[in-house]
Structures are given as C-alpha cells and as structure tokens.
Image (cartoon, rainbow, N blue to C red):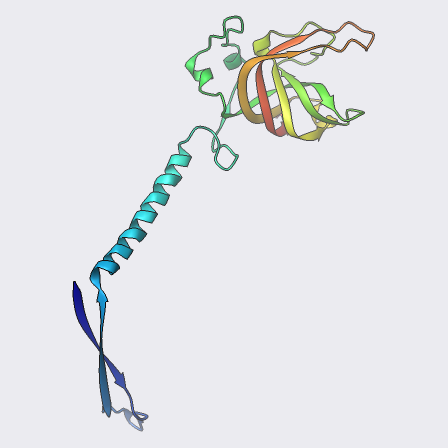
Length: 206
C-alpha cells in the first residue's frame, strides 16, 4: 500500500529582518510530493525490534549459563575444607551442593606444597593446596578430599606461598595422583587428590 505525503518547502526570497522585527511576508512557496512503501518501512522497524529482543535474550542466556562468559565466571563461590570433606573419595559420592560447583569459579584458603616451578623454584606454577601448615611430600599426606592440585595460569613468586593464601579458579573433581620423587635421598609419599583447580588468582590470606 502506498500513501502520498506532501511537504511544502518554504523558501525565503530575501532577508526578512526589518528595523522593528521580523517581516512575516513570504515571497515564494514551492511544494513537492514523495511516496514510500509502508510495508517496507514496517518490516524495517520490525527487524530492528527483533534484533534487539534477540540480543537481550542472548545476554541473559549467557548470564545464567553454566560457568564462563568470555572465559571468566560471573560469580565466585567461597568453599571451605568442610565442604570439600563431604566427598566420599572411596565411592565418589558427593552432595548436590558440591557437585554443582564442578566447572565453576571457587575460592579456597590453604597452604601450598610446591610441585613444579622454575629451576630454583623462585616461581611456582603447580602445587598442592592443603588445609594445615607443615604438610609436604616427606610426611603422610591428608586424605584425597583434603588435597587440591592447583595449576596456575601464570607462575607466582615463591614468597607469596610462605603463608596461607586464597586460591581462586575453576574447580574439577576426579582422581589425581602425584608420585613422590625418589632421588632426594629421603622418604617421600605418593599423594592422591580428589580436586583440581585451574588457578586464576593467588591472594594473601587475611
């Protein structure tokens, strides 16, 4: 359907400014007529609205989706060692509150036992996180549900791990085995852990 619309274009032919104000006189008037397709116009508006609705829907879908948006989690859950102890590491049974943390961002406090770093361990990338101070590969380890294997995105200086730290990262639950080194001349222990955290951040515990 086409509708005709007329627009009158008014052209002033001379300067209307007078000594006592504006002169309302108009010397010339011309008009033109144009048309457009109403259906095309409506379709265009409809498409714009639908695109905006889609973008809003997509945003809230990502907001409520499982774990990561652009590689980062929107919410980090504080997890205690008591929470982690609820996993039965012999049967694999765990409460729903723990299962729903798989693949999510968590924050856990603890003490680090270095596993891998540079040549002199000045910078540490991989370590075990345990709930008590003094744990190491030369003493019997805690049970698997009280050990977290942590792999950092970027190495951190060893001084950061001299005291308790907060570790923030993505939690995985499974069976992880760490063989104790045999070339140190001292007795070492193999360590099993039920948790893995791909660490995103290390902070001093306070």
